[in-house]
Amino acid sequence: MTAKNRDVLISGASAAGPTLTYWLARHGFRPVVVERAPSPREGGYPIDVFDPAVEVARRMDILPSLRQARVEMTELSFVDGAGRRRAGIDSRALPNRGIELPRGDLVRILHDVTRNDVEYVFGDSISTMEEDGDGVDVTFESGGTRRFDLVVGADGLHSLTRALALGEEARFIHHLGYYVAAADVGKEMGLHDKVVMYNEPGKMAGVYSYLDRATAIFVFRHPELHGDDHRDPDRQRRVLAEAFADASWRVPDLLAQVTSAPDFYFDSVSQIKMPRWSSGRVTLAGDAAHCPALLSGHGTTLAMLGAYVLAGELHAAAGDHHVAFARYEEKHRKVVERGQSSVSQGAGLLVPGSASAIRVRNLLAPLSGALIVANRLASLLPRRTPVLEDYGPGPLATVPPAGLT
Image 1 (tube, one colour):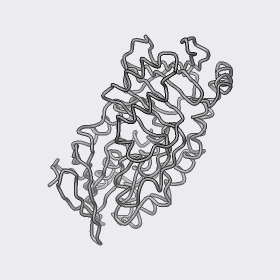
Image 2: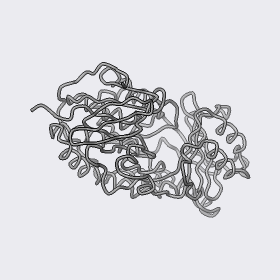
Image 3: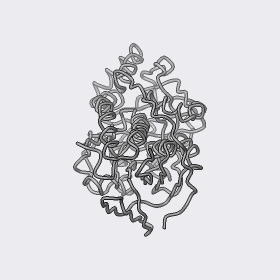
Image 4: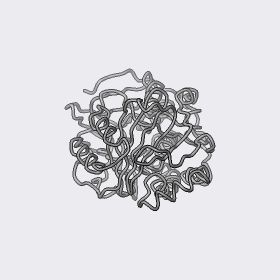
């Protein structure tokens, strides 16, 4: 049976978007990816890919590439204001249940495996959408217009697609009380494959050293910022600088490097919770639909798994979006809800809320740090790893690259 609704616009080219693109193309659909960034996004701190996303990667024939790019961390150390090591955890003792690699490497790998089969449009974004009974007319920020059968928003925590189709962000975002900032910094600390963290109550500053790079990360408690702060880097830098203005250790130097870095990243630690992920011919994937929060450690896993299920259900339903979207949500929501329920444990380990909590964390780390972290990692995954359904490969639809008109 020939599938209908074959022309699919996907907004976002991080993890969910390219994974969805790969499988849609192999099931005979014609996906087009539009991404606001001018090219595949580079940089970013390491992220984790756990099962069942590891199995998704294996079926995409990219597992060797992920393993080649993986980061092998050896130690997590906690230091005081003078830089003296107070506690540590041997990362090598933790259960190896996934693949850790730089976020930019994952984006590159996913782009490389899809770019010859589908159309990518960088440096543009959806501006408006008008849906009727047969499709969706999309206008882009560049001024171009185009018609698609279906639209998928895979454009992250602050999804514009979600706002256009299902309502404003404030209806669905749940701020968990923290903000995070990060950027690449110099490796003058002389570390290799190690993480060093310094805490004050409600604050953490750290350096993540891996391969030939180092990334500084700041996490801190802060009331929710309102408005378009995720698009105001100047205000973000001010908020970060004020939060750590009196901090010790190497914080002043790291702050100076991070706030002046071209890859400066800043965002809230928030979850997206929605009663439904679809409206008509538009649906959501990845963080746009169900961001579990940065400290969870498994947003990428949920994004890749959900993209696989969404593509498979569209294939199984021969493009009938009413059937496919309902099945996708029914199957994937249970996994998402279990993942979202355990985020607070990560904050307690990385950002203790009081001086006494910091001391207790440091005291327990050398004795049972591996057990603490292992239990936390176990809680971040479903109690039983979902068995991936085999939707079949389907025909590969090769689409020549073309710009928006």
